[in-house]
Each structure stands twice: as C-alpha cells, then as structure tokens.
Amino acid sequence: MLSTRLVGVALAVGLGLLTGLAWMSITLAPGLNPLVLLVLWFNLVIVLTALAVEAGRRPYSLHLMHLVCMFLFLGASSLLQYSAGKLGVAGPIGSVAPQILPAAATPTLWLAGYLAAYEGPRLLGLLRRPGPASRFLVRPIVPSRAFLLACLGIVGLVYLGAMGLVGAQTRGAAGAALADFSQQTGAGGLTGAVYIISANLARALPMVALLAAVLVLVRANRGRMMLGSLVPVLGFGALVINNPFAASRMFFTANLYAFAAPFLLRRFKTAWVIVITILAGLALLPALSDTRNVFSFEEFTAGGFLTLISPLQYLATNSDVDSLGMTALCQKWVDRFGHRWGMQILGALLFWVPRMIWPGKPIGTGAMVTEDLGFAFTNLAPPITAEALVDFGLVGVPILGAIFGFVLARLDAAYWAQGRQGVATCHRIIDAIYPFWLVCIVYLTRGDLFASLTFTVGFTFWILPLGVGLMAFRSDAGSSSEPVQKMPVLPGMRM
Image (tube, rainbow, N blue to C red; front, side):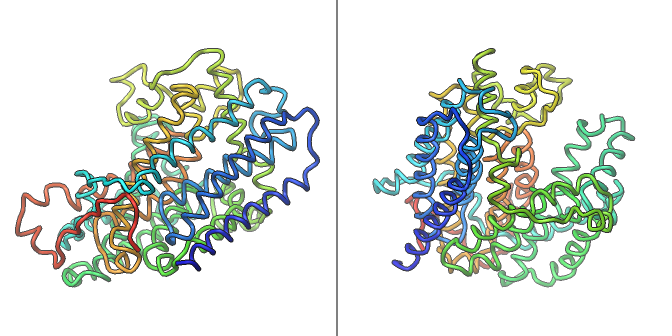
C-alpha cells in the first residue's frame, strides 16, 4: 500500500516539476496580474494533490481522467498561456483582462464542489446505498443478450457500409461519406439528424457490441459457442468499415482505451501507465486533427502531417487547450447578456429533440458565445466549468461540480466494487461501457457539452439491450453462471 501511494505522489510531483520548468522557460509577459498567477498555481496544487491520491489507488478511473484533464486543460495550459501573455483562442490577455480573474477562479470553485462530493463521504465514513442505476450496471451480461447486441452490431456495420464507410482510411474520407449520405437523404448534411445519429449511435454500436462479446467470450462459463463466430466478424468489420482512425480523435482514443483498460491497464496497481500514455498522446493530437483534411493514409503520411510536437509546447500554444481563454470569453458573454439559468445544460440533455419540435432549442455554448461576440471562428469548445459559469454564474460552479463528483463517485464505486483482481474476471454490464466512459469524461471535461454529451450517449445507449427487461424473462436471466454482484455501501473502493 505504501509503495502504491509513493507512485502516486511521485507521479504528481513529476507533473508539477515539469510544469514548473516549462513555466520558468517562458518569458513572462508584461502586465500580468499576480493574483491571477496565484490562483492558477493554487489550482495546480489542488488538482495535483488529488491526482497523487487517485493515481496510487487504482490503474484507471473516471475520477482520474477528470483530474488529468483538469490538470492539462484548466491547470498547466492556463498557467503557461497566461504567463506568455497570449491565449490560444482569446488572443492577447488584454482583450479579456477584466474576465481573467473570474475565469481563473472557476476551476477553483469547481474543484471545491467536485472533491467535496467525490472524496467527502469516503473521508467522513458516511454510508451511501446503491441506486437503481448502479444495480442495473452490476448485473452480469447474459450470453444471449451479448449475442443479441453482437447481431445488432453486425447490422450497424451493414448500415455504415451502405453509407460509404467501407475502406475509409482517414477522418476526412469518413466525414465526406457521412455528409454525402446525409445530404442525399435530405436531412441537412453535417448538421442533419442522419449525420448526427450515424456519427454517434451507428459508429458506437459495433464497438460496444465487440467489447461486450469479447468479455463474455473470455470470462463467462457459457455462451462461448454462440459468440465465437460473431466476434471475428465484428472485429474485422470494425477495422474495414468502422475504422476508428477514420473518425474523430475522441472516437479513436475512446476505442483505444476501451480495449486496453480491461485487458492490459487493469494489470497495473497504479495509474502511472495511463497517465504517461495520455501525456505522450499530446504529441500526436495535432497530427490526428489533420486527418480531417486528407482522404487517404498515403496522403496523410506523404503530406507531412504525421509529425510530433512537444507536449509542453502543445499546452503552451495550442488553441485546443485554451480553456482559460474560452472561459474568459464566456464570462465576457455573461457580462453583456446575463446568465442562461440552465437553458444550455437543458439543451445539451435534450440534444435528441428535433428543432422542428423545439424551434428555440439552444445551440452549443461555444457557438453562442463566439457568434454573439462577433468572432468569425465559432467552433469554440468551452470546458465543463465554463458551462456552469454561463448558466448559473460563479455561485453555480461548485454546485454543478458537486453533482458531477457525486455521479462519478457512484460509477467508480460500481465498477471497482470487486477490486482490481475481481475486475479481471467480471463480465457485468458496466464492464462493457465503463472503459469507453474513460475518454467520454475527457470529452465532457474539455467540452463542449453539447457535442460531448451526444458522443457519450452514443456509446451508453447500447448497454440497454444488455439489461433492460432482463428480469421479465427469468429463464434468460438465469442463464448466467454468476449471481448479480452486490454493491458496496461505501462510496470508496475496495482493492
């Protein structure tokens, strides 16, 4: 136990030292507010302290992914870009000078509420009973349901093939095929319902089905014969028709970690492996982003797109991680137009409602802010902390942070209820979706909320065939060789 704690502390100290060295190498811009710098450093100390605890506790978790994102996008990048005097999206810090301090304090308030809700009950020894959602998630996957989902996954592959995704090698090629198909149906191209459904639900289906089938095939005592013939079909189809590389960066990394976590990463006692891979992955993100502009892998490699950059350079200069500047712009919007009082979050939760039914449905927060402030570029992705700021102001930030922490604590407790060794033999419903949620949390943290929630629901929806109505068919429910797992009453985790 002591050695695992030391690994977590060493990892956090190492990240802090790297950030400090990068900061000292920057020529500080004139006119920096010392109070803003103090708040940014304070945010880093808080998140690294929490990260030290979690990294030594288990090999991966939703909590860990949220903390890593808070460190990267709302900690290190904010400090480095502000100190250099130029924010990736907002530009020179003088353009948002009045909004910088509340923008810097937003992660502080979020972390206060989030950590109180996530760690508080465990530290105080308070009991927390599992709810219906948790009891649903810990049910073993019945082989017949895994077979049903695998069949649906094959149907999904046929649908994607009909859309022209067969052999698509890059995000640009897949995006063009999806857009053309959506346009042909008269559903509005890139913004149409067909495109949104296909890019999220249809593409996620074969991947969730494949993971569920593999878990049952490897870990269950029954159902191997019926699934054995479908797994190769799903695996081959996922590469040829639903190529993860020919998709967004989030889709690619979600599938990468989803299949690595239960079979490789869970073998480690601490989270140093996944944290190191995330940091190394920062060097590839710009190259992965460029795949949207090419239509073949040969064009991608020949065109010089496959280049690596320093992760510290990426954090210090790239607009993708300028969460401080995005939050400052959101505060600037609030100063002009006032708060939205929950409408942005409601719009994100009801993303599936067509605009013909709800003509006044909100658009994404990033697009709303940039359009109203007169920006030509409107593809802004404000972090989850900024969503709370726009809807309810600074007062609402810790409250929504606490709700987020409460949800993640429940999900982490459900997944790790059996301990690290127990996870190695489980084939519960949560085992088929939790690994995908690891990157969904990254997306939700980084933003924006509309796109990330659609992405998350696209994966999560497909666990419903694994369990909904299961108890109505007792013979089906009884075909599993394992009893329903009992949930612990503590929000913590037993290793």
